Length: 238
Image (cartoon, rainbow, N blue to C red; front, side, top):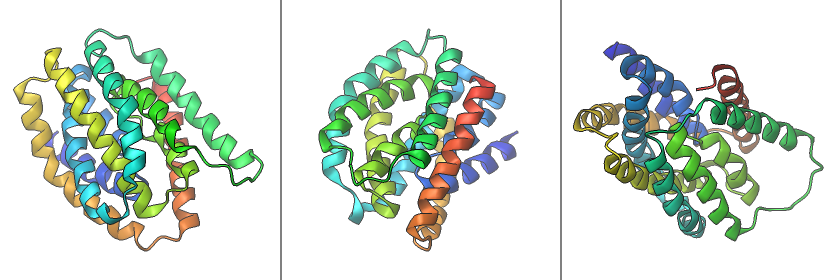
């Protein structure tokens, strides 16, 4: 089982290093199998904090800090609220709803009229609030965040780094809330930290891949990952 967790962590972080998200869809089911749902989400959060931190460093020169600031404005209080609610929340219906949303977003991106309309900067306060609350309940909502960062005009390293730093802020608050709600024992912290080095290696590998991808291929890869995650959430419900 430990080998399976290690392999899933490396694969998840490499995927997230390329697309900015999707790693949780790979790693969370394995963690649930190994540790159970209530322990898996906090462990995943610790591991993702390390993985996202490494992506911040690798893409630090391209980060849009204004987006991160507005994201944090809405994200910090809602991450705290969601983390405190996590211990008792029924999550199956919410997960399926998220899956439907992701599929609709991809369909909209493919079918909408081609315009130059961008997501306004201040809208990231609302994006941060919604994403942080749902992330605290579901473990990860990277696919939910992706269309907004893309619509703002961020791609490749700018997208990966900005999304990663926004997620780091969110995860730090979530972990504080989990600890306060007594759903983050020391064993879960140590397990997440043990997975951490594999997350760093995967981030480095993903960065090398991103640097060589044409922008159009990069966006298509993100949409494909969003579709897969959406179908997984709808079918499994958790």
